[in-house]
Length: 68
Image (cartoon, rainbow, N blue to C red; front, side, top):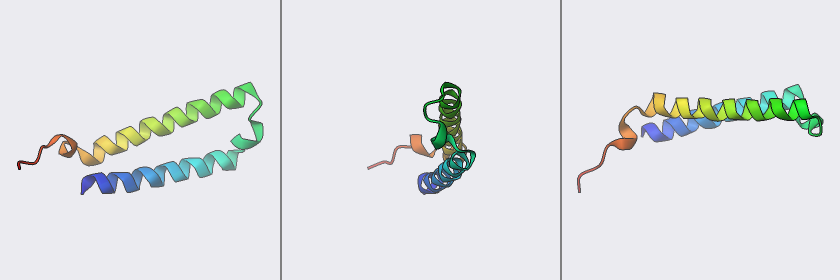
């Protein structure tokens, strides 16, 4: 169950990040090198926050094996 909650929170965080990137106009400066580097750093930051969110919410549940 924690995995589903983590997925929902991660989707919400990613949607907010995409909205903010569009609000700053990243899509309008695709051919500018500095904007492209900034966008790449922002995307890496979003991915790292997603990983942190997953591990913070799920804790040890992804590694528990169910006995058959």
